Image (cartoon, rainbow, N blue to C red; front, side, top):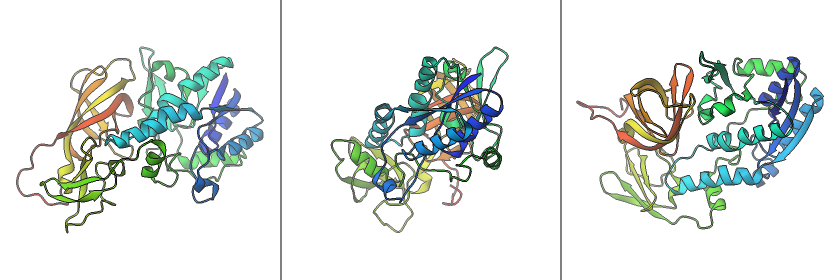
Length: 371
């Protein structure tokens, strides 16, 4: 085949390109220019994936492999579909997941359009996920073999038209095997460290990104305890997310967490960890990979954030909306995050959390640790 590999300049996408070449395919490398270098990156104080400096690493890898390398400028698309919605979510009291939006709007459909222009059928990425085909001919998205690196959670928004055009050659490998393959292939990025940060927030300062993106910085507002007391004042709702414990700016002698963010009122509600318990959630904007929602009452594993191990529950879906109930209460179900539904290791789909559903009352005395 003639394949296009999305090259970020990191070890994963570089090995994906090398494996495709070893398998006898004709390989073309493409790097997406998504943003400009931050001041912290220029000063050498931080590093992240998809930075402009990574472009040179991708080019070096392509030179090593002897394949063509192209650069496409998606900075405006990335700003409109990822950075601006990220800021808007925080201003609305939600907790965004920009990696899902990047996959949905930047990393796949636009690259497939580019591949069509070059007469290429298949786009390859370094994602840790697997694909296969069911008995009806539909593509199935499955979790990677390496549970610690699995990225299937971020890919729930892809549909059949995309999944039929992509390959994930690293899905059956763990990270050690990928590093070993990079050395075997003689890649110059074989020992390049992984980045765990959001690419456009390399220093972890989400609030500053929001303030640099929007025209008007949010004003201060009250920090309220769930019992009705006003405990203090905050510097803007974009500085808080459900489940947050550190940086609240108030002290009462008890351990407090953010329970809710009321953006229209500009208020942040805090309380004990037990107040974060949720018995389920409502989601919207759902995508079902098979093309239709699962049958009513589908039993599944539900993941409410990337590092969440998942909880058994029941899914009631109606097109783009879904009600998900957990078998056991979960902590910190944050509006704006993705709720992704699995049947074993197969991703059925998912959606965006609108709100948490109250957990059943706890019977008898309950300690903070038990909650």
